[in-house]
Amino acid sequence: MDFNLLYTKNMQQGIVRSFKRNETPSSKIIDLGEAKSLPLQGFIFSEELKNDDFLVGLESELKFYPIRSNSEFGLTPESFEKLNYDEAKLVFDKMRENWILQNNVSMIEEIFKVRNHLLGLWPNDRSGFFEELWFILKTNLGATNLKLIYNDMIKAKTENEKNKLIKVKVVGDRFPELSSVTEADELVLKSYEKDFGNIFEITDYNKEKGQLVICATIKKSPVLIMANIFQLTRLQKAILSSLFEGLNQ
Image (cartoon, rainbow, N blue to C red; front, side, top):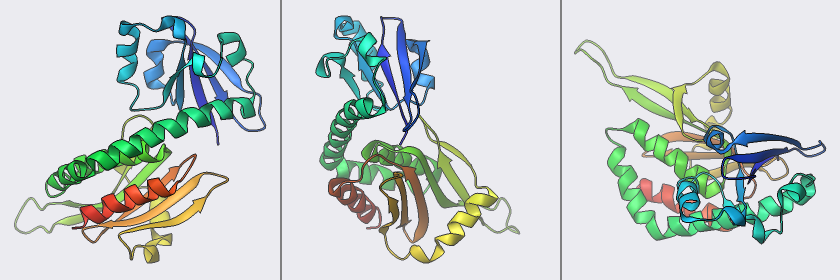
């Protein structure tokens, strides 16, 4: 799978490199303020820049992607710019696996709190429920291109009208965004109709391409989850299965 890494050049600038298998990596220099608008999968900071002000700025970004010191990998700006795909993948794997594990452990510690919070949103704030569920899935799977499709109800405005069932999707790179499903989404949903019999089911997983499909139900309502991921461990599966089980109690 493709991935983008940022290396801090100085307090104001960074080098973003995009790594794609069988392609020469591309590089560009950006202002660090631009990082929040880019689809990054990892952030490497120079140990020389490490100070309280700099780390406070990074703390809020840690929930979006792994952040590690260059000293852990023996990297300089010059050696970073020379990394090929396979070399960068070794660095990225180490960053990502540790970050996902930390997210998994935090989820285990807070799973009952998270479950109760989500169930509090379910009856009256379906949009808020799925926005938060989207973020939980993204951080615990380390997912990119994460899409959730679910059913929502538009309540009738008059006595003569009926409640209307609609399908909504949640997608996004950094934050979840809600929108109406497309005709293509409807076709995908239809192809998985027969797979919504269980509370949580990993329906398709292509390890080489990193493509994951999960068919789940919440209070008998179907939820289709589609994502690109870099790994899928027994711990990740157990955590998410337990969460969905809890949401159905």
